[in-house]
Amino acid sequence: KYKMILDLDTGIDDALAIAYALATPESDLIGIVSSYGNILVEQAAQNSLDLLELLGHTEVPVFKGLSHSSTTEKFEVMKISQRIHGVNGIGEVKIKKADRKVEEMSGPDFFIEAAHKYGKDLLIVPTGPLTNLAAAIKKDPEIINLIGRVTMMGGALTVPGNVNAVTEANINQDPEAADFVFRSGIPLTMVGLDVTTRTLLTVNETKQWRKLNTASSSAYADIVDYYIDAYKETSPHLGGCALHDPLAVAVAVEPSLVSTLNLNMKVDTKGAYAGRTIGDETRINEPALTTKAAVNVDTDRFLEEFMEKLITLFQN
Ligand code: BDR
Ligand code: CA
Image (cartoon, rainbow, N blue to C red):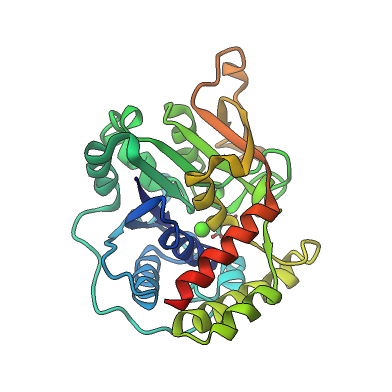
């Protein structure tokens, strides 16, 4: 059985990633590392703790990660993130504050410990900036060869970015960390906007959750309706909200949901293309052994599994 660690900037689709991971029997969720992005790292950790309690899974430990990239002094939440996820990251919905706190160990140290303990069974799923993972690899490069796979949500290869024409939000927060991870040789699957903007949710689905009438189904319906509303305003062409982060969790355990290209990727870190995820021209003639970029997705199969899993989870 796989062991999964999520690394989340716990906004709304990250909250869906937690639910999806808990509802996936092929892997045990062994911990959640917190990152900055949609909100500050402290808020991300708090949201993860609160959501785990709401979903009845207080056995999953939460670790605090780094609060900003190594190239910045401080992180400030973007206005657009606040519009999409709400100032509290979960659509301004109030849920009960968890009774417990974050673990003492840091997020990057938890990655290192788990890599040595679980080896190839370990799946790491970052759905925020890659700051924590880059820090862990720098501290202990051995983990590159130990772990099973990293399946990250971020980047855009065949479509424009969502922050600007070239960059996607998670990569944009820390292009250096992303570039470092891409070049490190860690087994990596990139689940970017290429596929995540093809898996959409609408109020038709949140209405089905509401009917279950449990604490978790109602809270998640309220939270996701906020996100759907924001998408109507910011991305009206899509016709729904993008299931970015839960798709990465799904692909981690079920890689056949997507078709991929084997590529040696890089991230531009400077100039007009800063934050762009693209093939590395300096390694174009080297075999691409470790990185796969998802370019197509079986949307119907994913959505069916997504609804089935979340409904089962919310019922219990
Ligand atoms: C990604 O950025 C964050 O805002 C979302 O949670 C998702 O991980 C989409 O670009
Ligand atoms: Ca995220």
